[in-house]
Image 1: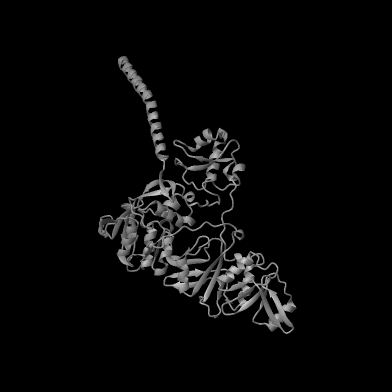
Image 2: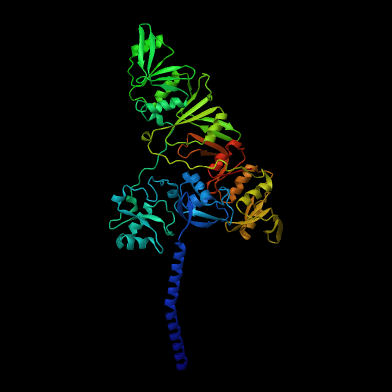
Length: 575
């Protein structure tokens, strides 16, 4: 017994010694593995050239269901309002990307680390990238830090900028607030630039002060600015409507009492090609008695007085009325229905032009703009074919609340087409499943235990795996006595798509819901320009899946408007 006990003790001692020796080895191995993972996570980005500058980025292999919207907006957290610009940049950095709306599984994409900085855009908060928008860098006590190999956020704060240990937690939170463009803090890329708080007193994130975001001009901006202080803009509006403003020389008005000589520099004359004219009394200096005599003796030269405090909108509206224009309600858009698309146009001034022989469209819409080319020329040309002339008057920079970033160039020759799916039946189901990269089998055998001793063998019209679960589609109604046993016993998710009762529209909706999409069939509205959403938009009824940049519709899209969706980086499928 003693011998046995002694052997047991020696064995136990050897086991303990071996375990003790192995423990630091396992820890070291684990630490080495973690370091390797960190090195892999913080790998140095690759670079590509864009307009003479070196762009840092990383390569991404396209997976099933990937779209540029999912990669850039959903995963990287970039602004959806700048998506079209990001698509343009992606096509420049990826020459092999022929169709931005369709990504091929297995292809490799180059994703820029800081696309806003590459495009020279401001961040969403209004500050120049890569620094976030704060009240003042000097007051806030921050520096711009470039990530190096092996860096971790806590290590940067502690070792590089000497934040006291007691304030590390607050500094981490503030760093995240100072860099709203960064969404994934588990990965720091070498070369990435971060705004970092420095020294003692690093204030919490809640105290970070953001500058106001850019505000686009609305269609009522003319009601907010003075007419007397914006005579140059008024002249531009008249010019957009085909009316000239005369500022040189004298205007002689014959009255019964004699001839009145009017200095056009002080009292501009607005004239139409057909000869209609009006005097603009900018400072409201012509008294009521003289105005009455002039209008009685010279009715073809009415006076439009601009009272103190009058808005630009009011002054222009007064001139238009005297020059024979018929104003349309400015609070209601003009809608052009073309096949399955409704084009909605709204402006500061919407009028029908008088028949003065000028080659002008019947309906004229004028808007004030803080940036050139807010509406693409091809859309203006399209509207002109529908009897509408769309004009944008560019405001002087001093009159705008903020200067807008210019729109990126879009390749006018880049082809875009509406994709076609079958409009009913199993073929429509197969097309939708294929778009999701789902390989479904037809006629798979399924055995259903209806009750003890009774089993029914049947076939699933389509069978596939999605979201980690097997899904069976039945193109007829099965009833609960069959669906429940399948779901409870066999773990199948059964979707009934009765082809004899469901319309194509309902069929697509049921199938999208089965795939986890929350899209509803309704009117989907898309603005021509994100800074001028209410001025021009297109509406199409259908299912819109923003994460896939996909519009599924049963409406016809006019050929002249197909490019609109392509420019926005969307796919359009008609069933």
